[in-house]
Length: 334
Ligand SMILES: [Zn+2]
Image (cartoon, rainbow, N blue to C red):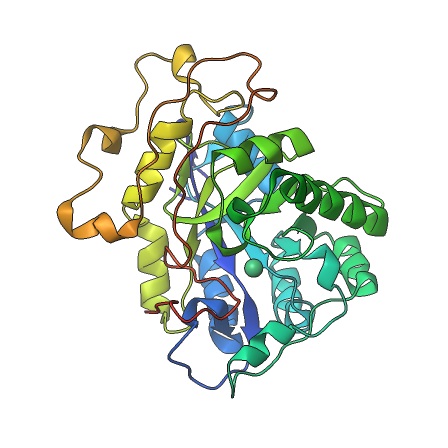
């Protein structure tokens, strides 16, 4: 059904970090993609007729503003490593694929020194401001990954606002273009973070909640699909073809944010709509280690951006298939 359109858009937002030649590793596997595998993965997308959408187009499809291709993916790259420009970009250009790179505004042009916390882990370079301009000029969308790559749900409200607004402003100064998209470092966000992202003017924010993005999602809490270093082509294809079952935490976030303003399809607008998974018990006993559930539905409040967000549990650090890049002793890996 290549080229077919669908009324039920589901977009696989793939998350990559580094692309290059790496020694096989046991930890942080979702943060690395072998260069040759990346080439094969992009060729597979082309061969199978996937439409690689830029993030804005994907948002339009999810919001119903335009018809969505039956097979749609978005390519995202967290942290803005120099190896994106060296290794990934030429491959993307060969196929004419758009992509989004999330940059840490306070770390541009530096080495990712936090890698030094783990001996033997090579320390990669991050793109400079000039490189970011070049990549942007090549058609890549640049989003924010905050100013200092901090855990947003742990910082004060003042710092939260600064991280979101300052990074957006700094990147916009560098690029001379609007920065509309955000990625939460460490998958660290809560309801206050979502509200702050809305107030800062972001159109979307991606998480490391695992699943396909659908109309059940809020644009400021979009799930993604992590590609692991160990994924052979068949596993990659499988991941795309079936999409993972939405992670329990994602199901809960969908329910939790369903009636927030800005939702792709507010429940009010379509009483018959619902996430088919949301009727299931989202918390089987064996999955309770995936973090506390969002507690209650938000009260309806048209002035939601001005009220203090309700206290709300967050997804714990290290949750999900995509791992935070800053080493953490509790970080578990596939
Ligand atoms: Zn990151």
